[in-house]
Amino acid sequence: QVQLQQSGPGLVKPSQTLSLTCAISGDSVSSNGAAWSWIRQSPSRGLEWLGRTYYRSRWYNDYAESVKSRITINPDTSKNQFSLQLNFVTPEDTAVYYCARDPEYSLSIFDCWGQGTLVTVSS
Amino acid sequence: DTQMTQFPSSVSASVGDRVTITCRASQRIDKQLAWYQQKPGKAPDLLIYTTSTLQSGVPSRFSGSGSGTDYTLTISSLQPEDFATYYCQQANNLPHTFGGGTKVEI
Image (cartoon, rainbow over all chains, first blue to last red; front, top):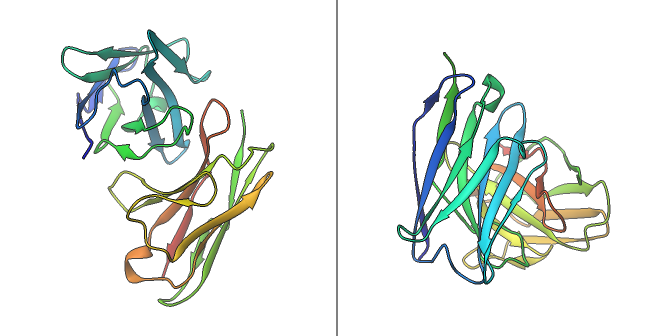
């Protein structure tokens, strides 16, 4: 079955870059059907979809407007994983971050999630 | 963005009760609606997608219905393992947006 394993630091200083990685087993980041998303959850903002990457003969990305100027999601085909970079973080970016799979691009649902990473933005 | 409003925000129920949770979208979402269950400290689990399709392995006591802007999740006979928080998510357009959650508690 598909499993997603997240890694990355749990503490980031304000104005610095948040970086997380999601390793995929049981599927391929280059799958021609799936899409790979980052979602965060905080008491103040609830569940918030941040963006996704997917492969359809070439790589595509979609990002939420709320973070579009600060976010990058990159696939790494050599390691079968994808990453999140969020620049210029503030305490409002403190949240549990999840990676998730959309099994079929046309469905836009999330059937497999990583374990979650609590990221705290604090000096 | 499509705003998703869930109600109630919490419901107290007993084992065996029928529970209904409602989700209202700020615009029509053409039945592109999913439901998730989340337990403390865990990631959400997909229960239902495209309004009424049960995800593999989900018990049949869970069901979904709706159209247009209004959707419901029903648990026909609440079991001890169903005490959790439930979220709706619209899958009709980007950005994917979630409801604020409904906590089902004893």
